[in-house]
Structures are given as C-alpha cells and as structure tokens.
Amino acid sequence: MSHQSALIADDIESYLKEHENKDLLRFITCGSVDDGKSTLIGRLLHDSKMIYEDQLAAITQASKTSGTTGDAVDLALLVDGLQSEREQGITIDVAYRFFSTDKRKFIIADTPGHEQYTRNMATGASTASLAVILIDARYGVQTQTRRHSFIADLLGIQHLVIAINKMDLVEFSEARFNEIVADYRAFATNLKAPDIRFVPMSALEGDNVVNRSERMPWYRDASGNAGPAMLELLEGVEISRDQNLSDLRLPVQYVNRPNLDFRGYCGTLAAGILRPGQRVKALPSGKVSAVERIVTFDGDLEAAYPGQAITVTLEDEIDISRGDWIVAEGAEVPRSNAFEADIVWMHEDALAPGKLYDLKLATRDLSGSVSSIDYQIDVNTLEHRAAERLELNAIARCQLELTSAVPVDDYRTSPGTGSFIVIDRLNNVTVGAGMIRGAVEGGAEGAGQVDWPAFEVELNALIRKHFPHWEAKDMRDLLGR
Image (cartoon, rainbow, N blue to C red):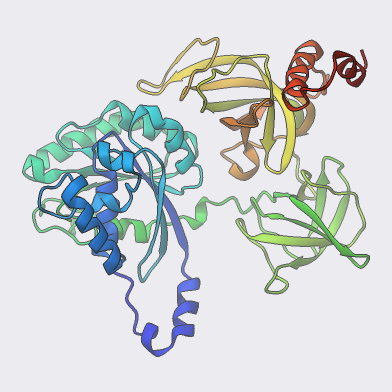
C-alpha cells in the first residue's frame, strides 16, 4: 500500500512524471477531544512508510517526555508539534501533512477537537473533499461529533468516513460497532452528505488503518467480503464528480498587460470547463466575446478545468477588471446587493447586525452589513433559535446587504464563487466566513444605499487610528461636512 517504486532508482524523471499525474485528495480528521485524530494520521504515515528516519527518531525521543502511550512511540506527536499541544495532549492548530500511495496523493488537515477551536476546524474543512470523523468506541456519538459533522456538511463536504476508533478498548465488539452506526445514522438524517461510510479501527495498534485487521472478522462490505481498511476507502473514493463542470465561473484576479499586443485575464477556474472558441460573458458589464487562448506557464491549453490557474485572452477588447467574473454567454446569474448566507463567526468580538464590515467575495472586495439574523443553529441538536448577535464559533443564517450589487452564486453549486470572508474594517482581521444560500428578491433595488451615519463613525475611528495628527477640520473636509 505504501508509495514504493523501482523507478526512484532506475528512472527518476519517469517516477516524477508518474507521481505528478496522480490525483489529489484533500481530507480532514475531526471529532471530539481524545478520539485519536493525531494518532490516526501518525499511523497512516507510519504504516504507509512516509516517515523519514530522523522524524521517527525525533518523536521516539519526544515520546519519553511528552508521549501518552507508555513505552511505545506516540505517533500523534508527528502532527502535534506545538509545545502547548504536547504539554496538554491536545490539538490546537490545524496541522497539514502530505503523503502518497501508488494510487493517489493526499493532503491531510488534522483539526482540533475542542469546542474552543471550532473556527480552526472550519478553516481546515473549507478546502477538503472528504472528512474522517472519529468516534471513540467507548463513548459513542458525542456533542463534538455532531458539531463537526454539521460543519463539514455545511461546508459542502460530500464524503464522510466515520472511523469508530479504539475498538481494542471494547474488545472489538461487533454489537458496540453496530450500536454506534445506528446512533450516527439517526443523526445523519439531517445531513445532506450523500456518501457516508463506517469503518471500525484501532489507530493506536493499526487495525483497519492501512492494513485490514484479522481481529474483526465480522467487518464486511455489502458483498460479504472482508471490509476495506480506511486507506482503501481513501484511495477509492470518487471525487471527480463533485466538481461543477457545467456552470462556467472564472473570477478575474489580475489583468495581465505586459505590452500593447497582449491583454490577459488571470484567475483560478472555480467551476465549469473552458475551451478556446467558447462564447463567454463578463459580469457585471454583460459584454460578450469569445475565448481566443488559454495561456499557462507550460503553454496553451485546449481545455481548462476547475482548480487550474490560467490566463484567458478574448477575441474582443472589452473592459474587464479585477473582481469581475467570466461566465458562459447564456448564463443567468442573479445580481443583487442582498443575499442570505450561513455565517461561521470566528472572533471574540460578537457580530453586530447593522455594523459595516469589509467582505471578500471570490476576487471582489466590497462592504456590507448583516441586516438581520434569521436564526442561530444549535450545532448539538441542529435546532434553530433566535439570536440578536453572534458570539465566537456560533453559526447562523443571516441576511446581508451590500453597498453595491454583485453576481450571486449558491455555495452548494459553486463553492469558489459562493463563499466569502468577513473582515473587520478597523483592524483588518478576518472575523467570519460565509456560505451564500441565494440572492434576496428585490435586493438590487436601492443598491448602494448605506447607513452613512454609522459609516462616518467607523471612518472617523479608522482615520484617527492611522492619522492621529489630523485635526477635526481635516476629517470634516474629507467627509464633505
């Protein structure tokens, strides 16, 4: 199962080419505290022979002072590298690790289990295609299990692997495994993820992580064969169909104009397939043209797919700038200055409805405010309850109003153009992340209307912070007062 190849010694260029062409799966590990997330990743790396000898020697030494596994090597220390993490035996920050097998390349995000670090977990999940949710077989489905499952589902992750860990501590009981599966399935009726799989394992001892375990002969697949180890599930999960290949979306990040003979529009293709000769439209202007070339550092492309960074040239000279979108000619994209969205609040200072924030939507920078909070979601029960403000780690459905109308995409259709971050205008700190659920009808009417008194207060504070030597008269002149 490990990434071994005779080409490394015989033909390094062929080996690198073979490695380059493998597809990449990004996934996260999440769950409650002490469910074994870091140990699972350490076991994956160790048993797939992706740990260097000096790394193994270092964690062997560290295990004597910071380990939690007695005389055995504590593989969790591979990802719990912060001193505070090793002292407390918990994960605090998101740790990323890369490994590879013969079939696929992987990037793992080990996310914290503590409720205090929910925002870190949401950050790790934002780029993942699959979530491994660990459950301690002794305790079953916990509050954080439900919390992390909901956040993964909220962020559009379609593949969930429920790893029921520490089976060695319940004597590899089939009855206990089935009980936890039933409990989780009852909760999962509220989730939209179409692909949920269960695997019993012991990350500490390596059962059903990389290699199938002989201590759980009752673990079978739908055909009655021995059930797959977790790595087999990760290697076989089909993620290519998760991408939106029908709705073309290219947010323009930069206009490349090196000379009079070349004008290219640079960006990462968020959705759809783009080909030379294809008729496209620029938003918000609505101007139409056709793709002339798709330019990359390695040469022109015959087709571009989601995730590729490209430069596009058009047959006609039309005005396109940073923040605009290139879409298919016939695409009907709603344009509005108001939309509803799910927001994950990530700052100690609560979200206050009516306060003006900076927003970054795809490649566009704009300003807006939360006009109202429809409801806050209790992530433990998924119930909706009223809220006047959002505290740290809270999740809510909100109504937002912007200072100008923009194209609006549903996050579940196009995550790249349907997501945004919220930035505090005074200190430039990212305070929230949002997933758009749809435009508000009639929102385009009155686009650009701003609560000017509130804006003036914030602008005053901003000017005083960065230009303390300015006099009051200077600020009045700037504001036109």
